[in-house]
Image (cartoon, rainbow, N blue to C red; front, side):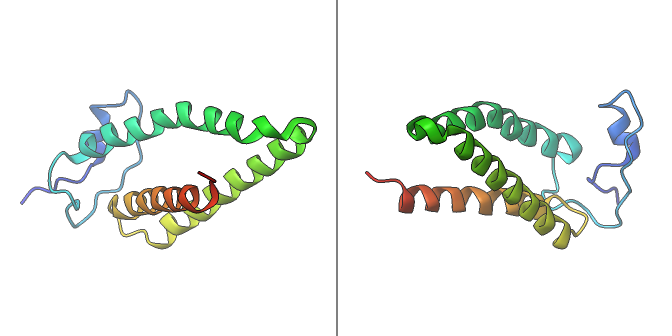
Amino acid sequence: MASCCASAQDASTYFPFPVPIRPRSHSCSSHSGGFAGILVPLFGYVASLGFVFPNSAALAMGPQGERAGSAAALLGTVQFSAATLASIAVGFFHDGTARPMSAVIAVCGALALLAQRLLVRQ
């Protein structure tokens, strides 16, 4: 039975350079799409961050005025801290599939929505 997980052979069809992917003994959680089934949605998500991050930083620092430098430093610290915690969570729950990464992305999105609902005044 063939596995749907990406292998080094599958990756070589998408990239002109060697991609170090270890073959897994178990199949991917989606059972369809394989490497492209993960790559395409992930690309869409990461590409949208280029629109979201600069605009959210501008909106967060807009009302700060004279404290804009300190606000930018705090915003950068919070972003890097959140990325560190998310990376640790993905590494901790690593099981050879894309499930931990997608779960961490979903949890971060839910936490962002919750923070917006609780912290932003209507």
